[in-house]
Image (cartoon, rainbow, N blue to C red):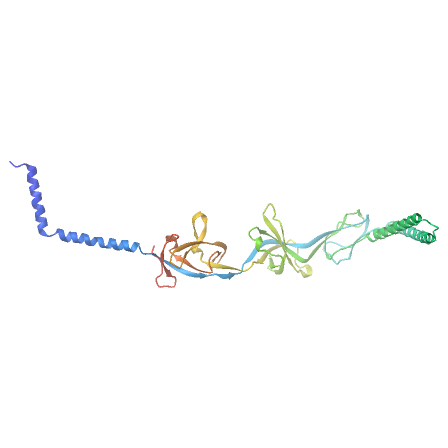
Length: 367
């Protein structure tokens, strides 16, 4: 009796022979061979350069105005001090009065100064006579040179005393050394003032100053004498120039004090007002780019993906200068540069690409 395993093997062999004889295997093999063709095309397509959209950008001259928040300040403030002692007989000015140089501010009592001046003048006259007499006798050899020197010293001392008394009387009238506005008047009538006390405080408002603080990154662009302006909260725009730039930074803020000087006829602008200072910076070549083109690269470097003449991608770092409504102002690029506008996120530095101008009908890039 034939074993069952042999029987099944014979059946399978007969079935296989019949399938081969039917001719169905060849079409299937040919079909499978045809299925490999799209894969080859896919590999070929993958080897083609990546298509990106590009646009040429040209550098333009950029005029920027540095804006600072500040305040107005008087050009000068001066304490007018008394140079002699005495009681205030008259206080002639009040706060807010505008004075000219030489105007009388306050007057001290003279007391016994006139009588002491008369005494000093009498002593001076006596010393003058004695010196002249000794000088004549010295020519005749009747008076020694030592006696003549003593009389000359007495005359000089009397003259100095007289001059000092005249100055002391003059100083009882305290006058404005400069033109300005009285902001304080400590010297009230009847008050005793000693040497060095304040009669009045004057402030100079014409010219007027606008004060601001510039950080250490921007101070290099500042120059004394450069045109500047400031705008008050009222909307008034005032033109002036840079008067002073601090040579040393404030230790606490690391900023530099800067002063803008402007004419202020009639003292219309007061001290202590909020002011927005505008300082035009030197013109420089820069590019205005859409903000979307700026990418963050390795180590936190910002820049744009450019396409070179040989169609290779090069990441170009840029320095962000400022943001504008139209985009971002940057520096650090060649005057003429081709930048990838679509597809920049899918390429690497050094890759070869197929650049398509933004104006071409073939818009967009494969993603």
